[in-house]
Image (tube, rainbow, N blue to C red):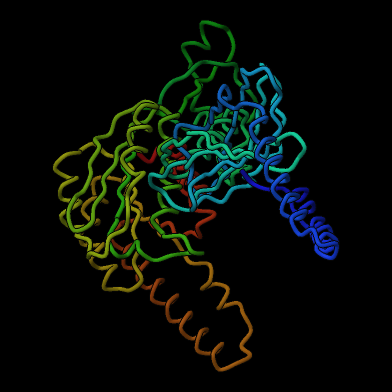
Length: 435
């Protein structure tokens, strides 16, 4: 039971009453006033509408997406005979940012109502909703009756799976450019025969099907489509190089968002997708398979990954991969390197993969370095920062050159552009039939 402002106003009104009664020689009047006020308050709490037949159901996605607004829907149903007026407070996990937690509600008998709000988890992992609290309005408005609904519920936070839905929707409408993904017309650039059509101005004469043209009495050209059943293998380094943060978010989290976008795009294109996770040892390996079910398997495999303060062993990791997968594939390695020594290690370990496969290293670039380099030098501190940024960029360029000389492609991107650039690269590989 929680007293309201009206209750405290009546308590305050009793002060002058007590003063007058004391001056008149009747101090017990104030005591009687307060006792009656408390009894009336307690009595009104017992007369409050019953919540025993009130039910609440919380609805949300099977898994929530980290750093994204996830919709939460609360459905309240009152099977009692009286309308319940109350203030409702839902309790999401403490590390979730919520658009709102409290609602003023009026729940009529046998007429369900819905409430919605959004939560944004800051980290991946397992959490739980901690229940729901109601403060029910009582007659006379002196007190609120507190009720706790047992709505505790576990929830899992994954990488940004909501982005996959947006990708699927925009792809269906041919609007992937809205995500920053570049995809040129692929008709005629693939290797698998699709159909025949009439010759048009500007068509390559080498695509003319002379036998079909003779049968139809007019020029006919062959159309080709992208080859399916190709393979994409994603490798993730979870060693100490992925412990760094960009804008307060670990590089590994940015990597996982880009990874999900890539495997989803590959699965939609009918390609095989696989996964290798390594640090000082190989931690997880999922052989390449095709189908949307494989995307779910990979999501479950990476949702709880954390970067570890250990030195990675890429030589052992890629030797492991080489013994288990021979078919030419696009092998994407999410890792980081800042100096020539680390670049030489990667060239030694990942270079042999590049001889058989199309090898790509993806790095998350910190945009603060570019900001420092573009900034004005006004103080000695600015000068030192700019010098440090210049040295760091020169080291990265030298390291990139070493990796490139080993036949390894490099994709260096800021976090917000990483997924779009990676999927664009994948489409480019498909369109040019590089596999």
